[in-house]
Image 1: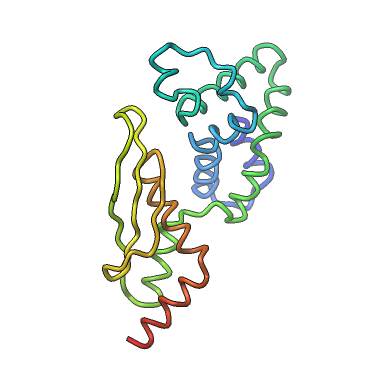
Image 2 (image 1 turned 30 degrees about the horizontal axis):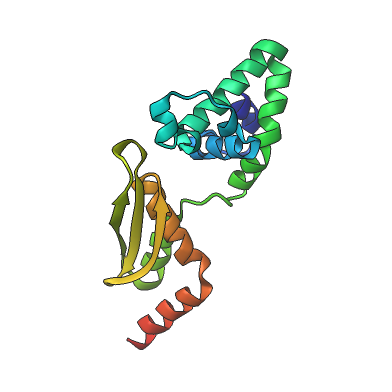
Length: 185
């Protein structure tokens, strides 16, 4: 509710659907687990032996749940204003970056770039899966015309693909190479 209220009051010109997308990006599991890592919450979690052995202290879902629990505890102990202050202290910068467009859907941006410039597509493939079933790590490759452009790691296939696309978009030299090859080929 706090993030929705913040968005509604600070960005009244934005369409409702856009505000919903921003809120979803800001309160999603990866964003909340980032807050947990900032607070070093994993260090304070009480976990069962199995969770402990399987790396639960660093698992994104557990860390995100821990942040939600801390917010709930602050709310119950200190009230709405304190919970709001806590949430905004850790999420306001992400809200502003997301609203400004700094939190991109890298896969969509890369696809739009390639389609716009070349009327072509990129594709993704999972190159590697490691770890136990409950804590998988994926390596995804992003390909353009059967050429591997970059790889990305993540705890989900989607995260790995996003990270791979992000690497391509952030590598200006790679983008120049692709453009020149396309123009000369």
